[in-house]
Image (cartoon, rainbow, N blue to C red; front, side):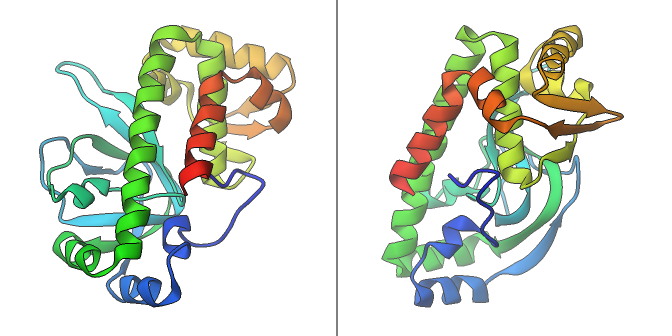
Length: 234
């Protein structure tokens, strides 16, 4: 997938379509502003639209009773929210929470289904993207079980920077603990170690990546695996 050093405009999935298919899809789109901390959908509820982010990014959370949820995936300009449309299912399987404010193009669910039936190129692109998301969810589950907080945090920061398209983006330690499913003290210690190593700088709710290569070296192998899966298929 495109990383923070490669920032193509628009939505990568849309940009990869043949010109005629892309033009038809764009004609169905309306602009939508992604507002920080906005919940776009909840699990078990039908989605009226699918979203193709052009800026900003969205966390995908699995929710258990009595918890805030746990992040299992992330969607930015490399992908789409509502990929279950490919399967003909309108019900959202996960909570979608805007993590980085920005913009998106959105399409009414039934209109997207109709265009899928019409466009083999769109079917191929979204079908492959569903596979990439499945791999991302599986990788997140293994990462949670087997990897320490520090490498997991480094991976999460890299994923966020890729989608923010900036070395600096807003974040709080409380939100990081929420996303990673750990206690805040664990995030504080892990972030402190990364900052002491000169990889990041954190100040008043804003985080800056100072050493991208060093952060990639500190991350667990899941980050590289996610990139390989995306690059191989999309």
